[in-house]
Amino acid sequence: MLHLAVLALLAASADPFRPEGIVPAGPFAGLSVDVDKARPARLLTPEEAAPYGIEDGEIAVANVQHADRWWVARIPPGGVAEVIFHQEHIPDGLGHGQLRLRFKAGLWPVLVPQTPEEGLEPIPMSDFVFTADGIPPVGVAGPRKPGPLKQYPIYYRLQSLPQNLLIISGSGTMHSVDQYRIPITDAEKQSVLAEALETATEAGDHTLFSLASRSCVTEALGVLDRALPYPFPNRFIIDRFKPIPKLPQAIPFYLFERGLLRPGTKLANLRDEFPATIE
Picture (cartoon, rainbow, N blue to C red):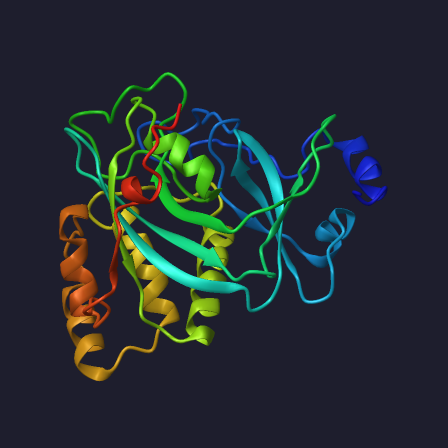
């Protein structure tokens, strides 16, 4: 059951962690983003997390998306079982890169409704997706041309895998998503999760997306680069070519230059893992 203090917490605010969703700069500065559809994840302080029944050692993350609703995820320590890099192939699009986080049996995060809703109970969840997305403001159909590279805010989002499957199946057919297991130690897997959540919290809703320097691929790779202790040759190569824009089509190469693409690390396509079309 939810802690009774949730009711007191929500007395002052219908949703205590709803972001402002205002574009901070660029040609669309001052316009609003629909934060009912997209939000950056946010680590909670112990005081903020207390009403959600946080237990010893757990961390709490707000604005986690599942079933088109917003939840607080209670994440136990040491729970990440696998980090998997997704290379999504979008028909007539550039593609997309993101990180999948699979949790150990018995250490699944628990999703607690962020605001009380009748009939909603806490839900254990085994898999999540960390994705950095450029979010256009309401009423804007595309970037302003000519215009600067940085136009939309970038939201570092945490979604349940079922939520992400709904999104990548929006056309009625699930996109092809290649999956690459990242071969790292258990401690490094926990570090990747921590770095992803810290990145999302620090950026909030006041950072701008750029295809050249701050995109879905650069940010997923950036989480790995900050969390993992690459040996000298790999670190040198990464730092040397860091300013070059990163394309979703080249994700296997970026993993290779980091020493993370090895025999057996490519898994079944996500579409084969979940063959049914998501309606």
